[in-house]
Structures are given as structure tokens and as C-alpha cells.
Length: 573
Image (cartoon, rainbow, N blue to C red):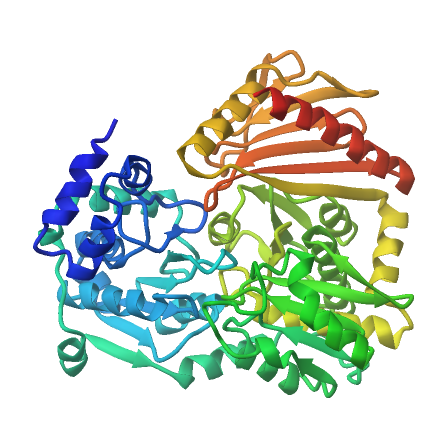
């Protein structure tokens, strides 16, 4: 076990650590548990790069962990050759505490290593960073964000030359370089203004934005829409305001309204306890305005505007749609419109995560579009898009946690792009006298009721990590072979990349393009299934339950039965 007290003392004694940080560390002197929390572990790349609470320590986000990660990235870039350094790295940041400071430190370290830096002049949505990597032709990109986490978190996401987040073949060597930096003296850093004057740091502004807007607007598919549709939108104090307002206005929507109390960027997120639009509570203010304005749809993006959630007015009530439902509706709309326009290719594909539901896959199949699956996270979805480029025509990528993308110019989920396309889709169906809930019900009646109950169990700290480990181990060894009247058919353990029958006998391998990951997925005799996995970015165990039946009430009943069985095992672990 790592000597966390020695690491703590090392920070206190280091000439490279500033006095404010040392003061924060002195304040926890004698608190063994707190020191252990901060210094036993280091931040590691999860499904979305580095992410953690802001504060002093090796397991926290601070200027030292950010600088060390950047030096590791710089060493990897330089190892690749001078051409990679010359192409450079583009950096964006969001509204969070310390985001701008972390972005500047990142720029200073890269510049000190002779790597060209392009730094955005102000906050930007994460998808704009993905676009910028491709548009500017850089080697890499970095965005400082913790997405929808609470205010005391921040993060550091790394992208590679195709505009998608790094996957293992890049992440692992960068991690090795980071681990080799055992002293802050090995980190190079250059004064920001000096680097700026020497041209090693270049400020990026409106040119990239304009190119991005042009591409997003080109995704529009139909003019037979009701442009008077009433839209209420909230950016939840994040980066979305200017970008979403622009695409809605330029797309021709006349009746949109941005929640004023949440339009101003703020890393404190003063009007929401948790800035995650997946949580229906985040819609509270937006719903107030929606009811006043009789809005048809309500949209919310998360703080870095890469995810978008939707509520729909239906029979006088506002109905929240989850990521599976919105994704299925978008697949149906995009593929049907492309087919109508004669631009749906024969080799079209959609890509979804392994924990995303099957309704979208069934819809795609009706249009002759194949579905590929990969691990959770858009680094995997767009990583697979990169891999299949040239063989297949990418139509759509999504996962149940309200992330979606289409087109080929952004290689990450994009909440800005999707606010426009969801609005267009809703306006198209309104023109034909239907709400999106009507359309969804029609899809269920055609394909069957693919319902879900997805939730997270929170286990914080080191004890929480141990609890999550025990639960995963329990499911590996003592999984239920029958749930109610449903038999287990087979299960997949993605950690060993093997498929097993209900008795635990090995019967196959996981698809070659899916790397190992700590995920278990159990398939039942009626087409229902469930999966569990530890979160890569938060102290959570994620549980995904999917039921299937031609009758809605039966599908709902199956959800309850499966959940009860899962929670019984969790309680015993």
C-alpha cells in the first residue's frame, strides 16, 4: 500500500508547492482519514479523463495534478516527434471553479515543452473543443470540465487528432509518462505572457465558432416544420447559452425562451442543487416558465453542453423523456428524413453503448441500418466511429445518459447540435399533429415496450470503493439463475471479455472492438436484461434494468421483479 503520510509530507516540504496549498494541508494535520483520502490514491483516467474534487492532494484536482498530467501528455507528444508538437494542442474550459486557472496552467506547461498551444478566449461547450481539434488539425485537445458533477468537482478530458477522447492506446502511455513524474521539479512551466508574446500560445476566438455553427446548421433535414413551436431552454448556468441561442435563432425558430436566472454562466450553480439535466429536479425553474408560456418542449443542457435532456408537453402535463427514449426518437426522425431525401446510405450504422436500451437498434434495423455496441462513454462510441470510418457511414451515436451525436465533424456527444435537432424533430411532428410522446407510443406499439429503470447507488470514499468491489464480486459468483418466472440465458463479463451460459460455462468471446472493462450484463429468457458497473468518474455503482414485453403493464411489472432481485444481492454484499 502506498505510504500516504510520506506523500503528504512531501507536498508540505516541496519548494514547488505554494503557501496557500501548504496552508490547506496543514489544516488537516492529525486527521489521518482525510490525509488518506487525499494522498493514498492518484487521479486516474476514467471514462472521461481525470475528474475529482478540487483541493490539495494527489487524488484531487489542483494546479499540481493538472500540471503533472499535462507534462505526461507533453512527454508523449514529444516522443511521437516534432511534427506532433508543431501541430499542437487546443485547450477549452467551462464555467467551473478553477477551470480558467487550470486551462492557463495547462497552456504554460505545454508551451514550456515547445508544443504549440491554441487556447480559447473564453468558456466553450465541450463539443466545440472536439470540433476545434479537427478544424485546426491539432495533435490533441484538452477541455477543463467536470460535466454535470457538483460544484466542488473539476476535470481534465484529453482528445486525440480525430477529435475524439483518448482511448487506451493513447491513454495508457500518457498514464505511464504521468506516473514517471515523481517530483514537481520534472514539470516544465513557462510564464503565460512570455509564451503568448513568443507565439507559443495563440488565442482562439470566433473563427472556430463560426465554422462550427455552419456545420451544425447543415445537419438540418426538413423545412416542413412548425417554426412557431414554443421552446423553453435552460443551460443550467453552463456554457450552452450563446451557442444554443444562436443555432435555434439561425434555424428559424421564433418562439424560444432561455431561462434568465440560469442563463448566466456560474460554477456555483446557484439555482440548482445538482446541475445534471438527467435529474428531473434540474428542470424546476424551466418548468415554471414552460407552464407560463405553454411551451411544447423544455430542453436543458449540462454545464459543458455536451448532453441534453428533454421534457414534452402531452395532454396538459410535462413528461420527461430519458436518454433511451430521446435517442430512439432521434434515430427514427433522422433515418426517416434521410431516407425521404434519398441520402440514407446502404452501409449506414448507429453506435450505442452496451448499457443503452434496444429500441433504437430495432428502429435502425427497419431502415436497413446496422447497430454496433461498445463500452460506456463517448470515447468508445466515437473511437469505434473512427475505426469503422471508410467501411461504414456513421449515422448516429448515443448512450442512455442523454448523450447523442450525428454528422462527422464532432467526435463527442453534442448538446448544442442536439437542441437544434430535437427542436426540429418536435416541430416536424407538431406540424403533423403529434407530440413526441405520441410518436414514442407509436414506436412502442410497433416494436414492443422496451422499458428501463436505471439508477446509481452512491458509495463514497475508500469504504465505498470496497463496497462496490464486493457487490461486483457477489454478482460474479452468486448471480441469480432465475428471476421470478424469467430464466437467465447467458451473461457477459466484460472484465474477462467472455460470454457464459447460465451455469457459468464459457460459450464465447466479446466482440474484438470492445476492450476489457468492469461490467456485468445478464440476459433473460424474454429479451429483458440488466447490467451493473462501477462509474468511471463518480463514487457510484450504476445499475441498468431493461424489460421487454408487448404489453406495457407486463414490461413495468418485470422491471420491479428484476430490481427486487438485484437489490437483495446488493444488500447481502
